[in-house]
Image (cartoon, rainbow, N blue to C red; front, side, top):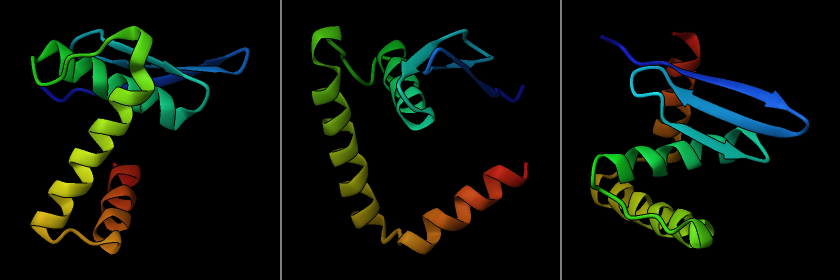
Length: 90
């Protein structure tokens, strides 16, 4: 099964919902809603612990881990752009 993410907007708040798990992320932009969803999925899978009062810090920590991993793997900005273009084409 292939999970999808649906993003909706209401009154300037975006909600991203994972079709496979029903997990949601909410933010003031599509990007923040997706980032919040990623945190919730990570928390659900036991990879991340999120304190609702400190979501910004958790997002920054996740971003730092991703950035470090990209550097280790030699992932370039062009690689990311290509991955985004591919994802949008699906």
